[in-house]
Amino acid sequence: MSATKRRTENPNHPRVKRNTRAGQTESFLDLVRLHRRVARSSASRLLQTPASTAVTLFVVAVALLLPALMFGLNSNLASLLAGFQESAQVTLYLKDSVSETDGQEVSNGLLTRIDIDFAYYVSPSQALVEFGASTGLEDLVIEMAANPLPGAIVLTPTDISPAAVEELARQLQELPQADMVQVDSLWLQRLAAISNLVSAIGSVLAVIVILGLFFVVGNTIKLAIESRKAEILVIKLVGGSDMYAARPFLYTGLLYGLAGGILATLLQGIVLATFNSNLEVLMQLYESDFQLRGFGLISSLLIVAAGAAIGWAAALIASLRHIRAINP
Amino acid sequence: MIKFDNVSKRYADGQDALSDISFEVSRGEFAFITGHSGAGKSTLLKLILAMQTPSSGQLIANGVNLNRVSAKQIAHHRRQIGTVFQDHQLLHDRSVYDNVALPLEICGYQPKDAARRVRAALDKVGLLKKEKSFPEALSGGEQQRVGIARAVVNRPSIILADEPTGNLDPGLSAEVMNVFQQFQSVGVCLLVASHDAALIERLNCRTLVLEGGKLLADQKPRPLA
Image (cartoon, rainbow over all chains, first blue to last red; front, side, top):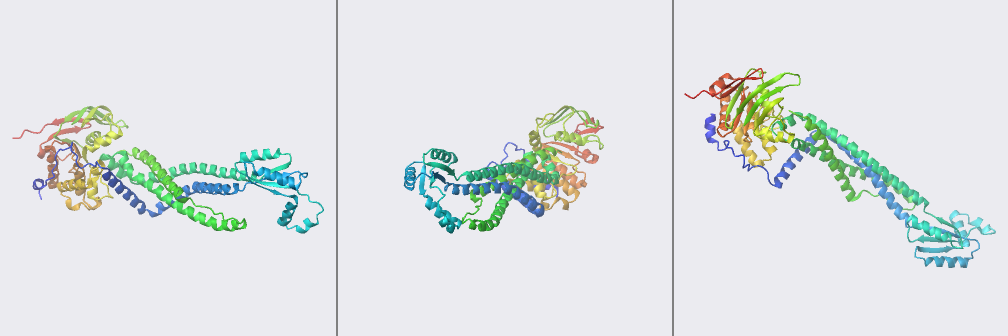
């Protein structure tokens, strides 16, 4: 077939029509279609090397899981604390000189206060019986000549914040009948401090992990770019911008983060299931039905989104840096 | 369209690849660059393609001052130029079709419109039946023709070619030149590096002769008898 013959047959012979590039994409839909194609090819490239992809995914997932577990643990502690704080108690021990009727009166008087939710009087004899029952020393108690226990009023504050409870305790201490005021909230404060510590560790870990993920994903992208250097060179030679050449790698980073995030939420499910079966035994001993809760839908989505965002950003930095360095 | 004004290119090792080159090629002009290997043909093409920057002198191609261009401008500049590389520069993990479609994809053409253009370009170089093949399965000459199809698919305003007929037999060479001349006739500026004396003689085009980095002669086409 001769060229001249073909030329006359071919209706698409070149015409200079540079101002009317009808074929160029204008619509959003075309852009979506293009991106979908790039994303699909990036995904299929990842699947072509399943072993190394799996290793990277696992690293990303574990890295995301660690701070997520810390935050999860903290939110569990916080909810546990909230449960306990509802039963925060203040015990007002009365002087020995206060009689049972006076004690009852003081208790009733306290009930009218707005900052006290509930109060009940425990007489010395009642206290002794309770002491005997709870310690199993009933026989000893019966044989006692005198009751060494004081009368007491057990109070539940309305406002359970540490400051309010302390203020209430101070005021109770000033009552003429008061001997001693005991606040059962010290250990709660300790638990709250532990909760804050866990949260702080989670935050520091999150920062370290984000940095680590940048290195892991960045390095993976760098290797991928190295192995496709010839292709990037050709793309640049025919006028592809750095951003165009980077696009497949951005999808690679995004996919690593996305899949890593999903894997992380699955792993936390496994971790929690393992913990909960052990915890159940412990909590039964405390007659509690407390259970570690999972991340929930919103938190899980947040982890996946965070993974995707970190993966994409790491890929963006790595690919633009390394692609810029490739010059024909 | 392409204007060299006292352009010199000295490499980092002190070697002068081009010295004091001045010439101008306008729209719709077809010029050969000839000379022995090492005469500076490839360097000259690389300067136009902004793969290298001139050491001195001024170079303007397609209205772009190539002495000072940003990375973004370079990408845009190269999209207006169709280049046939001596070593083809094809992507070996993509089919012939996808290789030729690459410049269109970069410019964001719709797949349907791109397909029409890719097939037209492949038809021009006689490779329509090979669109699904991969470059490795093709002969050197066929690979070269894929490169030519890719160079012309985007209807560039400048076509640069470095030994485009190096691997082709005379018949195919003539066909490729025919394709080039079609582009010339619609106003495209062509610059072809070649040392195929017979071909140059036969086509009777303007010829720039380089030797040792200097422009030895600028031969105008012989007047037609």
